Amino acid sequence: MKALVTGGGGFLGGAIVRMLLERGDEIISYSRSRYEALERLGVRQVCGDVADEAALTAAAQGCDVIFHVAAKAGIWGDYDDYFRANVTGTAAVIAACRANGIKRLVATGSPSVVFDGTDVEGGDESLPYPDHYETHYPKTKMLAEKLVLAANSPELATVSLRPHLIWGPGDNHLVPRIIAKAKTGRLKRIGNRPCLVDTIYVDNAAKAHLQAADRLYPGSQIAGKAYFITNDEPIPLWEMVDRILAAAGLPPVKGEISSGAARFIGAFCEKVWGMFKLKGEPPMTRFVANELSTTHWFDISAAKRDLGYQVDVSMEEGLKRLHQWLAASELLP
View 1: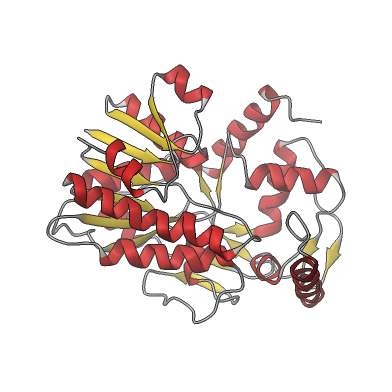
View 2: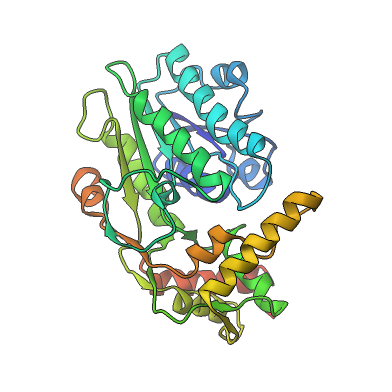
């Protein structure tokens, strides 16, 4: 098939592109800039803003499916920037599908769209969207997912996948942030509860997207639905952090603050950063304090049943690959 991947130069998008290439599909990557790694693979790259409907429509001509992976992530920033990238961008992707008669849209969602700051233990797709969000990313991802699911029709089949905490070689977000904070001594445990969390190795997340595309067509069982995707190995959050640090040759986290203190500090930082328009992200926010002190793991029975999803790369194997990549990247101490 011929596929357009928005955000094809990113972490997850790149993994999807490589898997599609391996099985012989034709790929167009649509990103804000060109990527040398995609050049080496011979991937056709189109540069543009994901919110530019005309550019997207032109790039997607002749495609059979769009994998919409591009998004603005993070815990801080202007709401308008998140809205443009995540909501307006998703609307543009849907419009490009309709203009070109593309019948399949696989969108990358986020489990954060159902996070209300409390524990989630074995939650499934029946979890509702909360009434309030403490940061712009989950709110705009919720709005984007609603657009994707509402766009499902006899002419366009849509599905939203919700991979939780993607990590692995090539990670430019989660792993580098953990390592950087640990090296500066700013990484501390929040609370002392053994909170279980789900994560997902990047190749497993990418494969789920291909499986969804292969099973997606107007009127199919998965059309118009959202699915949680994880490694199906819930692990205490700070044990996972320590294992990532061990893969980087760093000692485990030692310092600790209470969840209440972390939330208070987060609220204070948000107020200061907002009042004085400080650059960069605050060292703590209420959203992060809640994320790092609550349980959140999911029942992925629906993905196993409807997508045929199964875990190919275990946590143990993934951590070995992460260590090898960090060593080759000269990121180890």
